[in-house]
Length: 413
Image (cartoon, rainbow, N blue to C red; front, side, top):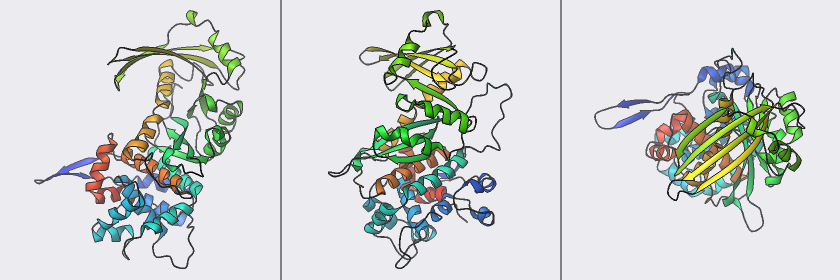
């Protein structure tokens, strides 16, 4: 992870923004869309990736470069802007030197210019480019530790859907997005728009096909627990899976519930107090041959006991899951961590909805809701890379220091 260093002068504390992992991008430039050997040395920032996206505008009448407009939008979202007017006000408040560095030396774009551009922008191309770039920043496979005993914790990816509720109109349903997020981070590495939640199943394979998943663990909820998905991950992607089993698979769910769990010893136990709740999780794992699910090796039972601190109310929940990982490939503690971290994607959704005000956004035209969601994903990843753990504090900082925000997106030459 990129580290943030602090330089303190006599008048104020100033955060010096990091430079990007130039060596990582140079080594992996061939995995980013639209790059080649001759321009690898110049691909050192997100701004370069944004400028290489297909431009939906006619050549005649273009006043601003595509990359400049997208850099402006990304920088403004990082500073808390959530509307076209907010982005334009952000641009108007910038120092002229910063506007020139963004690429807006000819003036400030109008709100309709930004709205038309993002409404027509290719959402698939945008998500593919942003996802590939962010994944390279977070995960450098050349520097990753090599497992020696097979029990080193594997990287994991959570797949989950989210509805941008503010995009709903009288004539159109709200935009629904299926995304893949790195565990224990705020980093979305792939995203696709689907018609509705029920269409997540058909979007699962296209979402993960371009993502490097070799020896990674993919976690998903019961809706996405499908035989074809398990075969795709194990046989084609060389990945592993942890699949939750609930009532939408009644026969399999009943079979797992009827296993002699009282005879299986407790494998892992954790306890945490947060968000006004005291929660204890117990995990049991058993190798069961002949399971009616592709490549399944172990069955997991997770018992969650929650107590609300204010009222003392107790709830008890039992959840079952399947994984192709054997007892020689993963420990019970690691399985428990993967399952807990899967629900960390909800924290990312909360940040988008509340801190970045996605739920209240009135941007609804064309592909603009999806494009803005992609930019929100990206700024959360950028703040994570810069070392921020409190994103509300990050927004406050970048609103006051737009030069620092621009440093994350377009490093100074």
